[in-house]
Length: 448
Image (cartoon, rainbow, N blue to C red; front, top):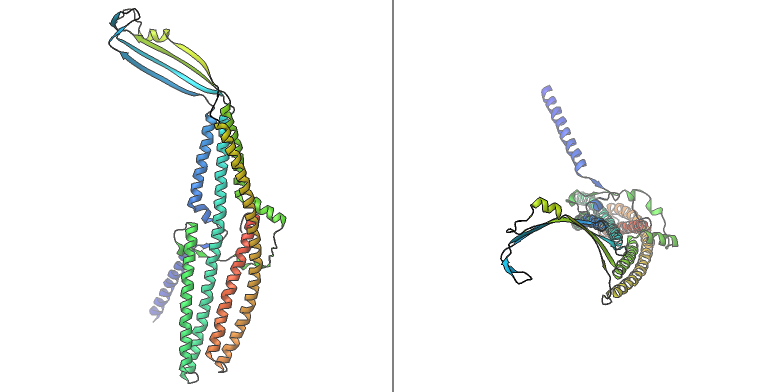
């Protein structure tokens, strides 16, 4: 008997270890995701591509700087001539020979109106534009992830709410079945409760489907491999975030929102690039001065000539250096420079218009976010009040149904109203939070 008890205790001990290991494994596998974690930014493929574009522009800058250095090259060639030729005196004779030359030459641009320096500045500005473009992508991605994150929380809340409704219907069904067995409740009432439970399970499945779709969409935005592992939780709503009030936009908030928007930095950078481009175009109207230097030697062998010096002797005797300066003066380029400058001027006007348009759009968007917040929080307070009142009414109706004073149809009607008001409260809750966090992101440039 003691051995049997010992075996049972031992089995319970091993079973406890196995269950604890599985739970511990689940904790490690099911990572809890919160909004503070920027997994999406770190793993987004377009952002990684933007890093490559930045590196390319940095290399363009390095190449532009190196263009101001002299280029150095070596040359070595040789050729032979065979056959008859006629000299200046009309004598035709055999002219077989071998020619070769060897040396090093170098060339450098001495002056071109700071052309290469401006090219390097242009490449630097373009690299900054790629960084700004990355910030724009991060901004758009953050807002999308924020919306997707809250949509998942909303879907989870609706699933939990519907699960509570099912639990209530199961309890009600249990009571009505017991009441029907003793003849206190008609079978039709039991059938109605079963039908209500089936409809609520159907609605639960619909909410569950929407939750899976929302999680899958969020996983795609985050470039996360398995949406089933996205265990989203809700640290924000654990705090009293609804006590924060935001008003119709103030001037400092507008200026802060515009300053945090990277698209304005992009337009400003484009204007700087066009200014540099103007200087590069004007450099074509100035003389181009190049300097060159070379040193080398030649060798000639006429084959039949008896007085041909040896290779090394000729190499030493024919060694020579050369220094040259070449000047290219532009005279007429068909008015190309003038028209290119006019095009840049028109582009600057276009950027000014785009800046004004974007500024108006951002102000309108900020105003819309504030109005959404104010209306959503009112809707949340109203729906919360309606939910609590309906919940209390359902509790009284449930007691009255058990006492036989109200019908099951009255209870179902009140319960349906409760489910509807709770769903409206949940939606208003997350809409309010989305407006609040979006407003904060516009003003401060971050979410925490």
